[in-house]
Length: 312
Image 1 (cartoon, rainbow, N blue to C red):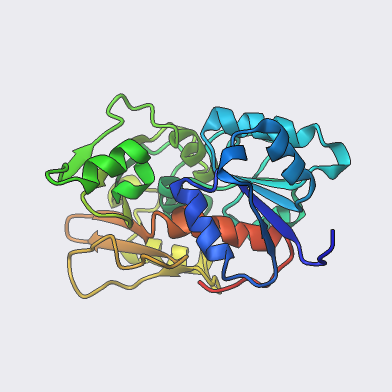
Image 2: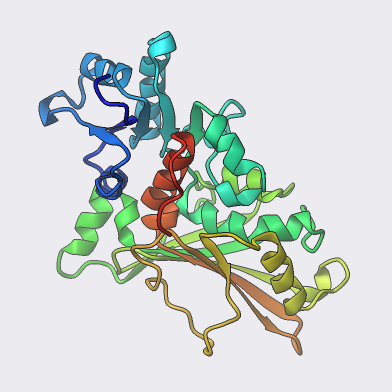
C-alpha cells in the first residue's frame, strides 16, 4: 500500500451504524478510509478486492450477509483484513472476541490481538455493564430470575422503523419482541455470567437515539442481603479508572431521561435503592448509536489497529 497508515473498509456503510462509524472515522487522521462506488457495494468480487487492500473491514450488515462477508475475507488467506462485525452473527461464537473492552481487565488486550471481533449490541452493553460485575462479586447469583426492561430511540430499528417514526403521526411508544426470543438475549446471558435465561423486554420511544436499560432486584433475595450502597460500590470498584464507564451517585431526582449521552461513547451506571422496601433498580444510560453501536466500534477499531484511545 502507498500509505503507511492503516486502511479501513466499511462493508455496509450506507446503513445507520455504517454511517455513524464513517462519520466518526472521518475525524481520525491516523487511518485511510476506503469505499466502493454505490453501484459496486453489493458486488462480491468488488468487495473482496477492496478487503484485500484494507487492514480492517467493518461489517455493518444483516447477519446472513455478515457471514457471507466473513467467507469472502477468509478466501483471501494471508491477504484477509482484520474483521469487526457489528451484526449479531458472531457475538457468542467462541472463535470471535467480544468487543466490550470494559468487561474484564484483559479484554482490551484480547481485542487488540484478535483478527475477529464482534461488536456488542446496544441493549447488552447496558445489561452486561450492570450485571457482570455484581455476578462476579457474588452479589447477584448467576441463577437469579433477572428481568431486564429497556427503551431505545428508534434509529437503531432499521429503515421501516425509522420511516414509521419520522412521518407525522408515528407511534409514541412500542413494546416489542413479546415472543421473548430477542436476538440479544444469548450475549446478555453469556457475558453477564448468568446461568438462567433472563426475561428481556425491549421497547422503542419516539426519539431518535439514546437508551435506558433497567434491572430491578429484591435486596433480601441476594446473598448476604446487601444494600444499594454495596451494589454501587461493587460497580465502582469494577470500573475504577475506566475512561468510558461511570458509576453515577444519582442526579438529584427520581427520574432519568435517555438522551443525555447522545453523541458520546460513554456508559453511565446507576443504582437506585429504597432500603426501607429492600428494593433496588439498576439503570444503564448510553447513546444507542454511540457506546451502543458506532462509538463502540471505533473504540474497538482503535484497539485492533493499535491507535490512541480517542475521545469518550
